[in-house]
Figure 1 (cartoon, rainbow, N blue to C red):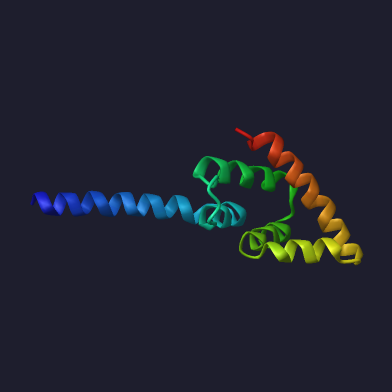
Figure 2 (figure 1 turned 180 degrees about the horizontal axis):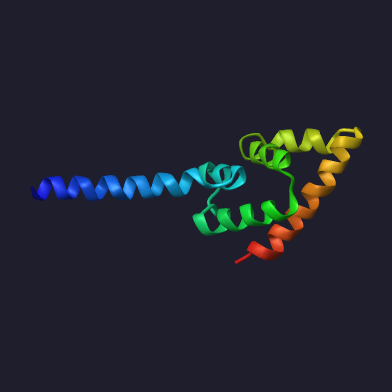
Length: 104
């Protein structure tokens, strides 16, 4: 019976952890999965909160992809299209706000 209770408790904790991770936004999820030393739940959550305010939903997926492929951001920054320029302006605002809001 004791073993059953331990397994049940572990299962409950696992479900809670998975539920909280599943509700994470795309940037928070990418941040938590990244290999960056500074990445932790509080910081990644803060960055996601700033993204929710400053970025469009489609932008968030693109920004999340930068965690895996930082060169993608540089290529986009160098692009000459109006759409990419508009995105880069939003991304710059997001970055500035995240630095001010999430620096600890």
